[in-house]
Length: 280
Image (tube, rainbow, N blue to C red; front, side):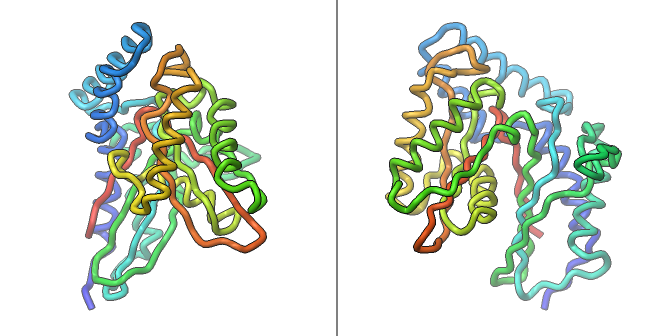
């Protein structure tokens, strides 16, 4: 049994909160740069250039890429042979979020209750999903989720007979309705299967996958390519100014489901698609 002090988790989370919000991931930057070569609209090409310039300034000055530094979302894999001393993992994560958002001068966007709207003043509590796996390590994936994009997601309980065409139609309908609001070029996460809530979690988890990596299942890898092509034919373009770069990627995650259902969820991220991964 490997022993980990909860302070190591808090420190890692604090660092992740700052770095994910201030430094654009290499996969996203690479996609933006490649889009400069393929975008047909000169206006939209100029916007892509500004987005890259914005990321450079954020990194140089260690300031947020976007003013909305998001609600803190975590996917945590816990090895069965690791034991955490001190705080619980949930307590350790929330301490790290509090310290990271305070010391990093990141906007605090969380309210204690969805209706009375009193700000918690340190961006806690985080939203945390746990998975228990083999090994003696803890893998933490952090995704600050801004709500300009979060508000434009959707879920639909399709009939099994709707099949892949029903999935494609729903994804395109959701992106079309979102328009310029999620700050495109966007990354589109799609969750298929499970239950209503499982599909929603899958769609958010899909956004944490490197966008240069296609699904490990050939059928879904091809569906990702098909959806990206169709999304980019919608003509929304960077920041809604038209063009051929509405999305940088479509990532799909799946799970077994009931014989009577076909749940599909779509979660959209802005052009920054911030995420960070650390292993303890």
